[in-house]
Length: 229
View 1 (cartoon, rainbow, N blue to C red):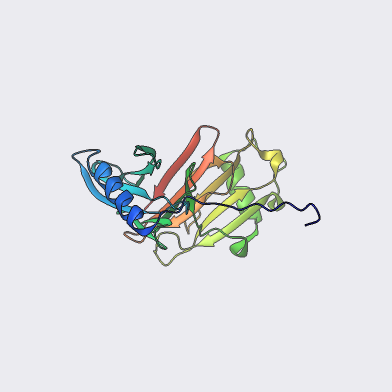
View 2: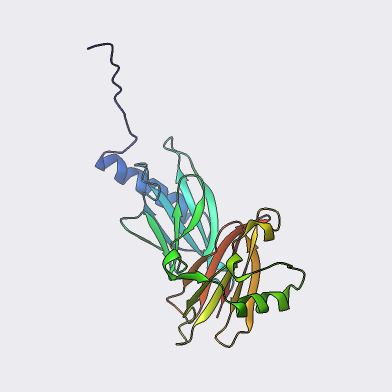
């Protein structure tokens, strides 16, 4: 056939009986991880045909929520916890491919647990204002040469208080700290709620269980999750 080569692609998708058996074994392992396990959900998070488990615990909690883990099935009868995070009442949605922790969404891509979906979008971004420049310079007066064109701003009701908070991001790399760029969150009266630096725009997730907003971002020290309420 003119020297053409054809390849047949195979997958690891399990037949229904094998899948049911794998899920049962995975759930049994997950429930025996700790006496404090409060819930176990199984689903194919990374869509590779082999189920993972989400394990919620009831004893290790903070403002964000309680600890939950992703447990991987390696397909050879072995299992392991491969990621941990904090969240409130994590559940699986979208046919088991996504975690919803009270409005904060997470995906497992087979290598990392990542926040998904942000209230910050290019559609609600605007060029910064002179007031933004003045507010940042009041906090960090050493940022010489900052202009409003170095800034993106977003106005959103982050904590369901019927008022618009403002997320301000410096986007020009000349103001970077290493590879990270600063962002600032102001309340509707212009008071600073928080500021930090991030490699990318923070993932902003209004919480569905309370009047609060959770935001996740990466910086030089790793991955960070914070909340304002």
